[in-house]
Length: 592
Ligand code: M6R
Image 1 (cartoon, protein in one colour):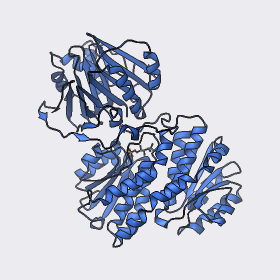
Image 2 (cartoon, rainbow, N blue to C red):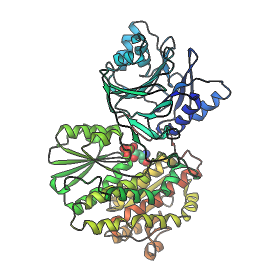
Image 3 (tube, rainbow, N blue to C red):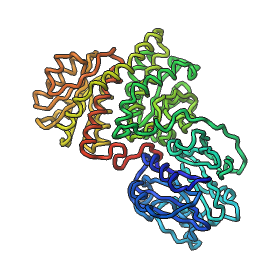
Image 4 (cartoon, rainbow, N blue to C red):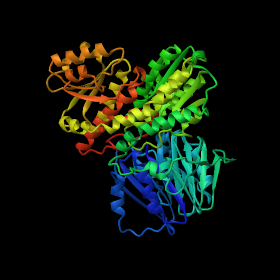
């Protein structure tokens, strides 16, 4: 988490850095700051809160420097405060550092520096980097950085500037993401591509253990020993429009509406054959799906499909639990890591662990060139485009697309199954066109404090996902449960105040789910059901009915999730909450 950006070039750095920080704000927004080289001085400006607070505090200040760094923070070490906000400097304020990730041995380094008389101004792990670089500096910033990086432990990325070399920014990547943007007479560093998209689509994705030395004239990449490395420049396939709101009130709403395209593009990418896997799922003894949050819910649905179409036993494990459990993993297993960002640290560690044990690793990621993409043996890419809203929506349905495609790849009727999948984008489109009633439903329910979401079989993970969407953006307590488990506990919660969202498409468990609805009604619960258009039985039984177009049983999750995304969105939006940047969260979770 945290977003960092660096610029050196022909333009005034400040507006470019602030614009870039706004596009990185999804990574964290507790505080923000910039450091600029102004003449022979370093100026540092920081504010607690969102980027707009920093922008306000800078109004009217005549900064003209052409080199600078910026940061938006998701606090790990040290509370959100001005002292702890980045950039951090050395004692003489000649070096400034912005940092993402954690320096695990910072306490040890801090104590050593304190013994040498260094006075610390913050509680962060970052400040040690600034002091260490200042102490190692003997006229060349790269040499100083090389001396310091080998002392740091942990997963991090940082950028540093100094008054002594006003046209130079150095960036280091070890575990946390960092890309270099190549411009004309200017160059950039950033945690993520959208930050620099208005200026360039040419990027170099740094690998772990790599350092980028950027000046307005060029970029050089080195390893931690100082050896030069040749890297490919890639052309980002998206333009800035895909990373902007295009008339929608929030990114989340725009991204919900982009789902037909995300699913369609992902199908096209997969069937183009570029990512054909050189193995069949049936070769494995077991498949272990590893993921977090929404990606985990996609994995739960993928399990049903994989077991149905390939017959290979499949388990789905939270990456954070997998890492510290004693899961027996061997060469006979396939580890399937699902991550939108490709940077979630727990998922990344799980991939590394599985590789050590000799298992084959396959990833489903949205961000090309991300750590999990690079570190897995094979990748299936989703083509959802950049997802900026913290709540995952279009990347979820794109992940389902890749999972369905993968699961059906070892089935004799593969082509028939793919043509079924191709019907999904237009069905989602139809559903989105007829979704106005969800806004008025949101108005009715926005004051409720608790929700229960129920579903069986493929609709159980959708219940979990619907509840996650609601709680993360509206701060309303919501619980997802298998509908059949309700009578083993949660039924005690049901009374006339409890909204119960039941996902009930006409599938193999439809009748069972109707019985669960009866149980809720008997206890006076308020039933909001999601079911097939024309299902009068369900409509009659429910207090509110959200319809989706009928579709083949296996594919229903692609549709049933959409009204739940919209319900969560409209409730949060009507409550006036910050839908795209909910409190305490960040889009990419690069801390354990
Ligand atoms: O980038 P990833 O898919 O690995 O992220 C996993 C979770 O952090 C993510 O899905 C999170 O739960 C979302 N905010 C949910 O909307």
